[in-house]
Amino acid sequence: MAAATTAAPPDPTYELTQGVNPWLIAAAVMLATFMEVLDTSIASVALPYIAGSLSATTDEATWVLTSYLVSNAIILPASNWFSLKFGRKRFLMFCVGIFTLASFACGAAPSLAFLLIFRVVQGAGGGALQPISQAVLLESFPPAKRGAAMAVFALGVVVAPVLGPTLGGWLTDTYSWRYAFYINIPIGIMALYMINKYIHDPSYIRNAKVSRFDNIGFGSLVVWIGCLQVILDKGQEVDWFAALWLRWTFAAMIVALAIFVYQSFWGRQPLVNLRVLKDRNFLVGCTLIFLFGIAIYSTVVVLPLFYQELLGYTAFTAGMVVAPRGLGAICGMPVIGYLSNKVDPRYLLTFGFSIFGLTTLYFGSITLGISPLTLFLPILITGFGLSFVFVPISIAAYGTLHNEQMGNASGIFNLLRNVGGSIGISIATTLLTRRTDAHQNELTNYIPQSGLAFQNTVRATSGFLSTYFGPANASHAARALLYRQLGQQAAYWAYIDVFRWLSVLSVACIGAVWFFKKVKPGKPPAGAH
Image (cartoon, rainbow, N blue to C red):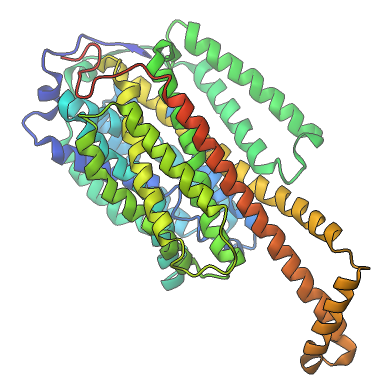
């Protein structure tokens, strides 16, 4: 850990709650978590509107998502040190306040640069909310009820990203994209009230002897995550490693990452103690949550874009179409809350990833002629399957750790999920661009412009359009229409490729699940009392 602490009291759960019903504590921290995670996806369906309003391209508008994730990821591992230094409750309230104020500034942004600056501030304020909330939950409930508690926490982590596009679409179409940020203000105020009333710091935090801040570890963390995000944001635009400056950025990232790992493993008082990764279950859990981040954020971005760009849906309609995933996740939470204390987490994870893999494989067989209800059941089932992923991963990953390791471990755990999300968004958007170009070349080679079939189609289409454009311009209009259809078909096949790639990723996750050591459901973690 980043600091030496006093021994935990004989009954840490009772001491932390101080007579408060732990479910009230769960509601307080879940509200903050829900607000923070919601902002990773609520703007996804509003990207075309943000781009148009602020005179930016759609690719530039995606920085609204990725800039938030990168600043969020930088603060995540450092949250444990700040909690010990300033007190967990005080630091949590400070972060909620910063997040809420930055949300107002984002909504009032007059330019893309201003919006990105305050998205970075917002992400920094929200970075500590997930690990602190998770640590509070794990300590507030006895081991036998931690599965149910993590199911509640998963409402914020799993349901928020899938409900975000629906809420964001409704706010964008009904009011403005700016209300996707303003919505955080009342939630933030309520979270501040509940945290102040129900959250208390345990003695091992109040009496902690905090080490000196690890400047080397934090500095190298900022550099390698910052370089990673620049590479992910600009790589496609500059043809990746074809650009000299990107190769130097990649080299700087590798050096900074090596310094961070060395400092975190062998430093005397590291900001982030990576030695916790020596625990096999936690290492496997971090690997899986990284892959899970890639999967869930890819689908959160890709599916609404599919409906908007190829089928012409509005932001609200696209959000409504993907809303059943949130409904499925909500339906799955009570089930996983009950089963988590009775069934081996490895079986639950296998079921969850299998469902996700089968549904994304089904998405890879759809056509452009689908109705809004065609994917209702598959999307609903996807959400139900995702609810069987997050909770069992957390139970298996933390099941062999001491209570005093929870804060540090939670920061690492959530960092990898956010980094996975950033990489997933970048990979998905890059694949869409590259595969669209590839499929367009394949289609044009299959049907050359000089071919008889193409010429006959142009003549037939020209004859139809001559009534509207006149005989002289009908040929040009016909070629433009056919080119539009060509681009639409090429983009369609690119989306199909992404969906099938996500299905393959799910199969890899199923294999990784069985590297977990068995954790008996309801068993206290090592060192728990």
